[in-house]
Image 1 (tube, rainbow, N blue to C red):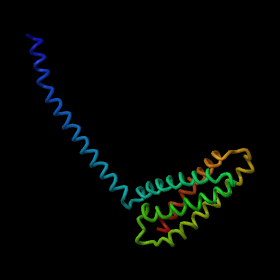
Image 2 (cartoon, rainbow, N blue to C red; image 1 turned 45 degrees about the vertical axis):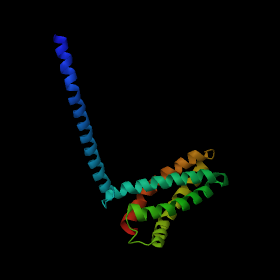
Image 3 (cartoon, rainbow, N blue to C red; image 1 turned 90 degrees about the vertical axis):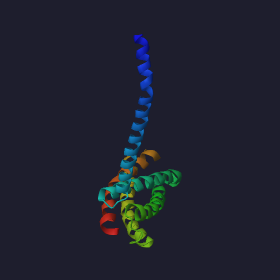
Image 4 (cartoon, rainbow, N blue to C red; image 1 turned 60 degrees about the vertical axis):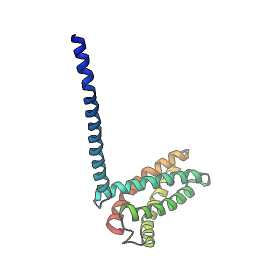
Length: 171
């Protein structure tokens, strides 16, 4: 008789457990949705840290494009590959920064963003080209992947300078 009572109690509480689990899942989903919505609103805002995160995401995407172009054109030499990759990725990054990172499409014209952002990119190109020239002298046997990684490390340092300059001067 005791076993029967225990089984009856156990099966009687299963619908209650299912209901509690379903409600808990819905509450968790609602909480996460609200939190993600607030995070998304903050990331779209004008706070400096939110802009830095957007800047890094745009920079990361343009660096992926740069690396792909660098590797595709490496057969023509690392300097040519660096130049082409820099021009194409910079033009795309300048436009994404103007529209997405700094929300300046209404304040800064495309030409102005390309000209001023391009000037900053030329400074970055000079630094990365100098870095490649130093690598060619100090480590002549370095391959294309190693050179691309070295350029990315240099570009990260230049990127910090670029964010501050774009935020304070251009946009």
